[in-house]
Image 1 (spheres, rainbow, N blue to C red):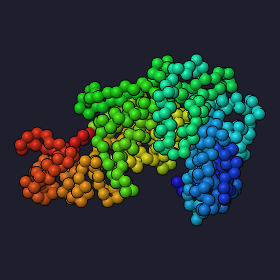
Image 2 (image 1 turned 90 degrees about the vertical axis):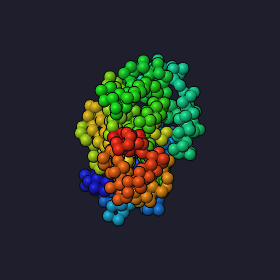
Image 3 (image 1 turned 60 degrees about the horizontal axis):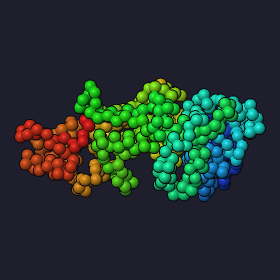
Image 4 (image 1 turned 180 degrees about the vertical axis):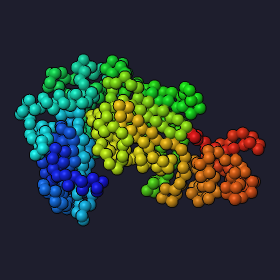
Length: 475
């Protein structure tokens, strides 16, 4: 990222780049820029940099407080409407601390302290009293984001607020103990999240498509977007059709749980020690896949979104309005939210991360899980491919495959050699195990049975034809 920041410094301020000195704290002009970037094309905000691009740096003692102030202000409904979920990142350039943030464009007009700002080449403009310029922003956003479509005849009784709102508060509090949604009323949450608004261009007011997708009962969802479906398919044995299938047409909060559970049902879980904690890497991957396919898709298209679990990979597909067609490079890409309202909502309840982090997490955890890298391809159909071929390797010099495996696995070289052989070849026989660990057939058989008893391997065949494979192996 340092290279990217240096390039931004060389380019200088403009329509999508803004520098702020902010040595010891945040000024209101920082938040005005966040509002204007949100209302235009998005942009990069760099703190600790003078107007001409000279790095003056941020006081290291104030970094923590500035980060907290930034996040809290954007998530405060009394300052921002709708609220935003962004964070400042820290980088060291030429020995100086610089704080930076990518502000994505939003599907709604963002107001700061009750004012509307737009972005021009020479800075931020307060256009609150310019009705023509305000209308232009609304029309531009309406054309780009279908999640803003208003359904004025959708009534409160057609939504499942009573059941789902307590779940939303619990999830928000799990993410952040003092999350403001915990104390807000249902109506305040809906307004704060941008799920109900008035369109000054058409004069319509009511719940929008994002609200329908998040809280609508199934009948309302189908009436507002008849093509909405997520088709989850497991295709490992019956390659012509499928082994298992789940067609999800319900609200996105319940849909998330159903799809994550479907992936869990048909893939091998692996727990790795990361930073001293046992982490289910499969859960991390499925979280990114499911949140991405639910949040970053075009819901007006008849193309059904898919999650396909195959023998050696998971593939997701969803209709998309591409901004930069082609493969996504995690080290050099500008994240662009397809549905900012939905994205921000999922971030608030801990089912997605700040824009751009999801891609990096997917690369990180796929590498740990299988030793491979995912492919993300931006096009009319956005496709994600996560390899599931098994590759056993150490993380922090420890290997943990699942919570049922004895701790001795961390230190047992025989286990590691056998599992490494299976990762490359799919199965192992007693003779192959004996050669692999350099021991007698009887000792090799005993080691294999220990792994069977540990719920790691399962035998197949009989007598001389008996082989062993991983339990739940998808190869």
